[in-house]
Every structure is written in C-alpha cells, then in structure tokens.
Length: 442
Ligand SMILES: Nc1ncnc2c1ncn2[C@@H]1O[C@H](COP(=O)(O)OP(=O)(O)OP(=O)(O)O)[C@@H](O)[C@H]1O
Image (cartoon, rainbow, N blue to C red; front, side, top):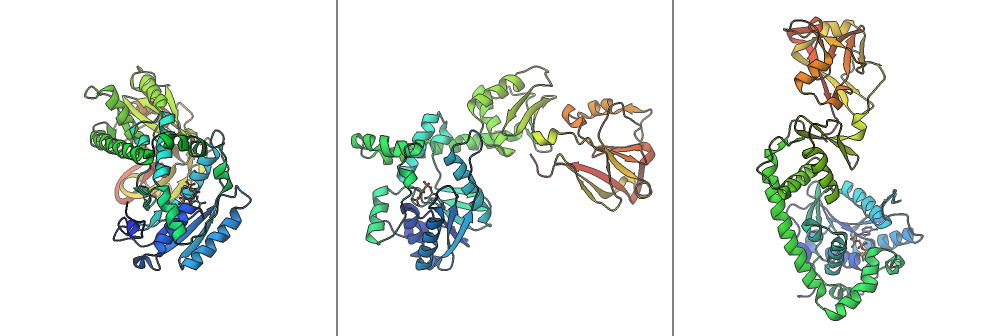
C-alpha cells in the first residue's frame, strides 16, 4: 500500500466536479479525509466541510465548534447542519441518526457536486459482517460502494480500501487534532460491539481479515450488479410505465427466483426500499399466486400493493383516502389540490367540457356516492358509473377516489375520464380537459 496521499481523492473526482463537500464529524477518519482534500491544489475554493449536529449528545455543539475552527485553519469552507435525529418506533438510534444525516446532506448537493465520506476498510468489514448476521443477500453483502448516486450529485468514499492503521499513521505524521466520541466505546450498539469486542479476537487469528472480507464484498458487488443488470433488462416485459403497474398475466418465462428479482426491481423502480424476503414471499403468495381476490393487499413501507385484472399496483396509503367533502372549484382556479394528495387541473383542449358552460355555472367537485349515471357523447342511453368504470378497467380502489365534477349540481364529468354529453363540446380552444393526477409518480 503506497503512503496515504491526496492523489487517492484526485483519482476519484469527476472532471466536472463543482463543489466537494466533506462529511466531517470531527473524528479521526474524517479529519484525515478533510486534510487530504485541503492538500489538493486543484480543489482550492471548492472544499466545504459539513458537520451534522444530531443534537443527541451534550458535547455535539462543542464538536461543531471544533470542526469550524479546523476548517478555518485549513482554509476550507464550513457548514453546520442541525438535524432532528430522534428514533421513531422500531428504529435503532444509529439508523435514525444516519437517516437524518443523509437526508440533510442529500439536500446540499446540486448536479456536479460530490460529498466525501470517510469510511475505511475496517468499516467496510463491519458493514459486511452486520449484513451477514441479518441474513442479507448479495447486494447487502456488497457493503458500501466507493461511488454512488446521492441526491442530485454523487457520494464518494475514497478511503474505503485504506486500512485504519494507515489513517492513524497519517494523522500522527501530520499532527492532526480530532475529537473522540465516547459513544464509540459503548458496546450497546451492534457495530461497536463487533468493533470493540469481537473483531480484535478474530484479527488475532486472521490478521488480514479486513482485506479478505473487503474482497468478498467486491465479489458480492459484482454479482449484485449482474443481477441488477439482468433485472433492468427484463423489467420492461412486465412493467407498464403508463400506470406504474406490474403485469402478472404471463410470467411463464421466469423462474421463481427471477420473479423475486423482478418484483424487487419493480419496487425499487417505483421508489420503495428493497423489501425483506418475507414481504416478497407474501406478495407472491397472496397476489401473484392468489386467484381473483380483489380485496387482497400487501402493506409495504407506507403503501399497499393491490391486484386488479392481472396487474399489481402500488398505492401510497394516503392516496386511498376518499375526499368526502364537496368543494367549490372557482372558475379562475387552474389547479385544485385535494386532501388525499391528488391534484385536479384544467387545460384548454379542442374537445371536452364546454368553456362557456364552465364559466357560467357553479362548479363543484364531489366524491362518488353511488348510483350516479352518465350519458356519454356518441353512446345511447345512460350508464351507471360502475359499469363505465368496469368497461374502462379502472381499478376498484380508484373508483371511490376519482372526483366527479358538477356544473350547477348536475354531473358533468369524471376527472380525467369522461364528459357528459350535455356538457361536451368539440371546438378549437373552446373546451377544457379535466386532469386528475398524483403529485409525484408512485
Ligand atoms: N456528525 C457528522 N457530521 C458529518 N459527517 C459525519 C457525521 N458523522 C459521521 N459522518 C460521516 O460519515 C462517516 C461514517 O460515520 P461513522 O459514524 O462511521 O464515523 P465516525 O466514527 O463518527 O467519524 P470519523 O469517520 O470522522 O472518525 C464519517 O466518516 C463521516 O464522513
């Protein structure tokens, strides 16, 4: 291993890099990392040390002060972020602090910004072992990546292949000052227990343990990337981008293992975290395998997965709430946010709801109460909404939350779907199209 020097950072930085944030806790590792960055002439004026105050320890403000002084001494920028890191029910304090820290740091980054973290090879080994004890699969056993997407920018871990002793030596040779976090000594936390009580024993027997475990992490990382690449390629065969659903009509081309992998990829694609094996199994048993049970649903991270006509949909729980209040939609209002997170809007169209009628009527938005009928342009007779919804393949849970638009108390439109014949017009720029959409895709 060559001496630890700033080139290890220069080699990782993208050419277009604008600002370099350094996640600086004031501890040994991030002190060394910051010192390395400050020693790179190409980074002059670009480096900002960021200290996150979790507000969990009495000394945290004093550490922030220490970090500010060190940043000043090194001639780099400094930023202090205050976060609320209280753990929620069932969450470990470490995980809550990390989540809060990452959330705050993520917001700092614009495109072409990077943030550097100071984890090293021993940290990687601990991460991998903790994942192993939790029963993780290859992506968990891949440990932490050196480079990853983070918010609008990138997260880099330049020291990930550097041993702790090299970091300690660098700090001594350069006379660096750092703070010691007394909570690192407490074996109450799993990671500290492993670090303080278990790993010293293992290292007596296997001195190169950190290197070999890091190698395993790289192998698992390679395997995880291959699986991910396969899933990314196969996903379009089951994923419907128009409504974000997962088509289960014909899965005969996939083995059970591949199906699990595709479901994981789908959930990741629509913004959920990787589900546990148990959740995946429930999903497969109750929805993919279950026959015709439209009431079945599986709860995952604040959303329900439901099935309708051989497709799985993921619906955040709050979006299933019915907005039961009738509301006035004022003529000049282009958009109307609803309490369940959806937004109604109108836009000019060449066919749709007559603008004249809209402008002269009292417009109200009301929930479905049951029994509504509609006569559609070009069709004979009135039809129950239920029948129209069935014909159009609108999932049952959506039927109760899709708003109805009334002009002077008469049903004129179903948002995003139909306009009643009496209110319908085809005339360039003389009509409104009524849209109903979720604020951000699920
Ligand atoms: N309070 C904090 N403010 C800013 N960055 C932090 C903070 N805590 C941790 N980090 C960043 O996350 C990395 C991993 O955190 P971890 O808790 O393992 O490190 P640490 O032991 O607290 O500190 P150090 O790595 O500086 O010795 C740190 O190396 C550092 O880059």
